Image (cartoon, rainbow, N blue to C red):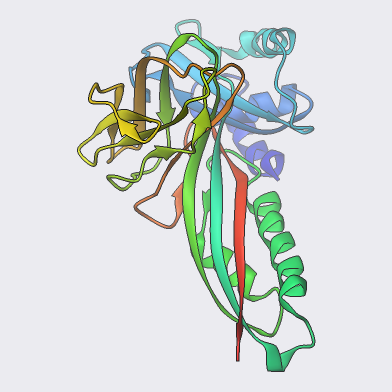
Length: 283
């Protein structure tokens, strides 16, 4: 589909990478095993990188690009590139959407029971992510998503569904600085990690104070020293020189979006996160 849309643009480029669409058209023509590509000017990044064109790729098999494959891509587009522009490949960044949904159904309209309804709803959720969010610049449409859940069975009356934005980080026992880009405005006071246990057997979580600063809680005690900041309007959180103290722990950092439709930009790919589905029988 991307090739079909970009083929006319490729003709218009006359084999020169001048605009963003030029890059997309030529890359999809020249590079195999690429299902989606996004290209943007470095001047739109924070901080700005003038004179650079940045690009991100999703491969057909979902595997990350190796350094050799990245160089092959750069070599392939080099003959078409404008001399004054430096192309740069950026790895995709996953934005996971965690779903919490309470699904109500009329038991008089079906012979199915709670577990059966759950068995129909869960594949609907997975199918939405697999079919609608395969490419960069995809948009999670809340109304379409909840409609798909309602359509799982004729007995379903409604669903009350909320979404959380989640970034993942595999921690080490060394201090790190992280920038987490949720790509969407987030509600103040909703940033929080899931509890994790550090190497000293302490239970820890990070949270925001509703005023834009990040703090840590260790064994139910809030520590007063800020470890970072979050800009609620842009959804960018920065953690500065923080030691999670947990070796190879998967840290899930969550925030609630202001809007129900979720956008992705630049190198962000929206991915299916966790599910928490409650089935309620209406008598």
